Length: 165
Image (cartoon, helix red, strand yellow):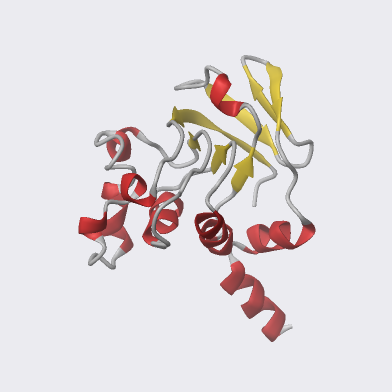
């Protein structure tokens, strides 16, 4: 996992629920190539066609609320999100994302920043978010356990590596 994540920002508001991230009418799809085109379709139907691997999703408070649908985290990971940064995350969505190896970063006050479509840099070691050449926010650090899951590319990979050691 890269400790510095750079990408273009796609901003969303507060209370982005799992239906906005991945609409329920598509849950019968099981192949990632079929799932990814519906990423964020409930909030922005053009998202999947304009988002590029490595870009960054920014939300306000309670990102990922609603059902415990794992598809919401799967599609964001599958489309190649470099990270999802929000003021807060719904608990189950947070665990699903981290367990899949998707960096979900808490950043108080991020929704007050004008970052939409800007290129930013997120330094996970320093805990800084940089835009327009200057540090604009501090992010909450990951615990060592969460960091180990992310570095392994997800909890399954981490457990597999420990069992094979």
